[in-house]
Every structure is written in C-alpha cells, then in structure tokens.
Length: 134
Ligand SMILES: [Cu+2]
Image (cartoon, helix red, strand yellow):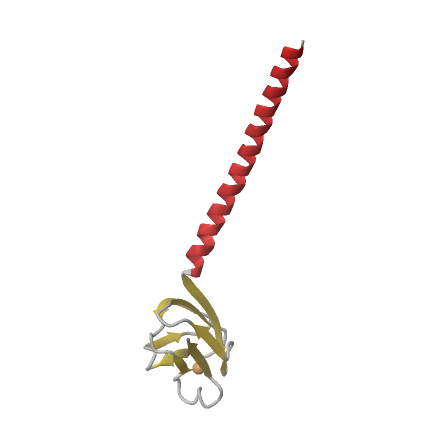
C-alpha cells in the first residue's frame, strides 16, 4: 500500500517535472527566437523620414559612426524631393507618393552633417535636417 503510494507520487512528480520542463523549454525557445529577431533588427538601424513641401519629418537623426542605417524615405508631397549630402554620399530622389528604401553606411568621422533636398529652392524653404554621427 505504502509502496504503491510512493510509486504514484513519483510518477506524478515525474509527470509534473516533465510538464514544467516542457513549459520552460517552450518559454526559452520563444525568448531565444524573439531575442534573435531583435538582435537582427538592431544590427541595422532603421530611420523613417517623410518628405513634403517643404520639410523632412525629422529635423535631426543620430546614428553611430560606421553603422549600417536602413533609410525609408517617403515622399508624402506632390512634387519630387531628394535627400542629399555630398559629404555623406547620400543622394536619393523620391517621386511624389513613392517610398525609397536603401542601406547606407555612416562615416567613421563623427560630427553634425547637413542633409538637404537639392531640388531648386527646396532647401531655402526649409528642406534641411541635421544628421549627427557619434
Ligand atoms: Cu524637396
């Protein structure tokens, strides 16, 4: 009788342990997967900027020197716009209603760089932003 009880308790304990470890195993898997996903995302910083008449939606963008930056530029305006900086080797035209996506590598030289829209008279009307490399 006692022996039977012990066996039953052991079986329950084993079953519980099995369930618990199965559960924690699943939890760990999920964490590992999401961890990998976020690690992958953080290896390339994504910067989304809308362009219209006549401004960039961000007045300032900060990136780390040498990092890969994924730009998503959307022209929400009605005329072609452009994101341009000769120093940063940036020159991306975007037609109205279109979105341009590209990877760009930040320079190793830190500092504040001026980025403009080089369409005639757009910079003068406010299409300028600072890209800070630190
Ligand atoms: Cu423009």
